[in-house]
Image (cartoon, rainbow, N blue to C red; front, side, top):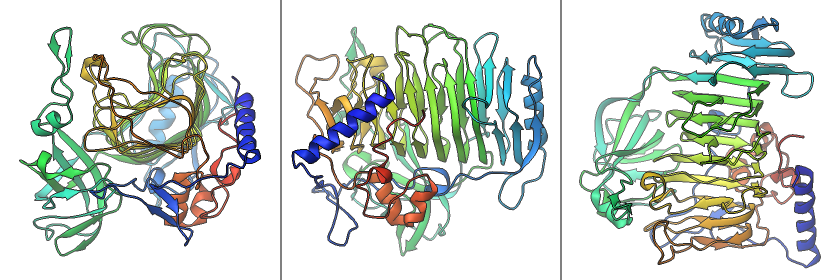
Length: 543
């Protein structure tokens, strides 16, 4: 199915709903009240759908900037790797301005060749082409397979001072505040890590200590390993701390004690900021190789805060973009991956995201690449948001080991080539891989159209499919014939829901209508029913 056909089908579906009198419904979990603002349902423990609106550059709702051009590069007619890297290095040596930028390396329109990895390792550096379409900048990867671009700082979080322990017996998912034993060691504005140690009691509660494959026990998450959430302190009231962004998971003292959950101030001197790549196309040599073999890949990003990728097309890359867990407040805007040859064997992932506050806006994966369009990796703590994401093969399937705080909003997955894979799967993967087990909790599919959905309920948590259109799958844990894993929450299934975009409404209410316009959408707060506001008429991001 082509993108135009998908747009036509969605339009026909909405027309049919109107003709049959099936007006948009409201969800009991997130709905507009009489004050025309969002209200949230909660379970008996206070768990609720979180506010996802801080996902994106500068915590969302901020227009991607344009830094001044400092160096211009023209096609050299041969290998342009050294010329482009030299320009990046020149700009990297310039001083930062008062907005945190050094400047832009401008690639003029034309055809370039690159034979090894380009690196951006300093804050305030942008690599910009002259457009990803006809008449723009086209970069061809030549030689043996390699990574095209690495945007990376150095190191990791460095804890500072003493830690405080959370004293609440239960902190629900979606909460922004909790009590600690000593808040006097913190100040408003401190960057902190909320650190949870994985306990054997929790692994057992999740049913993840009985995974056996070919007679061998599979290790889901090791006891003693940690799950960390990167946040900023927004307020302190006595010993009660309020964070800038909600927690993505619940914290139940039955399963986190001992040793409990700690809050610690951190520094991250090697993390770089205000870095980006934009406005070019990258073309790799098409190949069908196993995912264990060397591949042409597109981007690796790590140790970055406030970065972006905008108006970029990757063709015939595999495992195209990888975002590590040290990435924060980053936007991918109109980034497309195109496959021109079929791929056999295990499916690579074109958007592998493990950071926090990451937004993929109007991105797409097309062609018979047999790829997972988007995945998360082990112990990711969002928010991670896919907004108006389009894929015609596989869809959004968190890959392994408990990612939380994921939102797929107004996504379209046609499964045109791989009909046996769910378009959205928040599920128990059991023994698959090396015991990938429960891959997601407290995650939402909102107004998603897909061939199939696999939304399952983890112990002590839930996942949601609200206003979705497609077929519901009910399955046992892989590796077991029975029993079937309980389904998650399917609400307003097969019928449009209002607001039509959860992320945009949350953003609009937090920062005002201007914030929505700044990321490319019209409409006003509490009026997300229009196609213009939610992007429903444009499921595919490029023409």
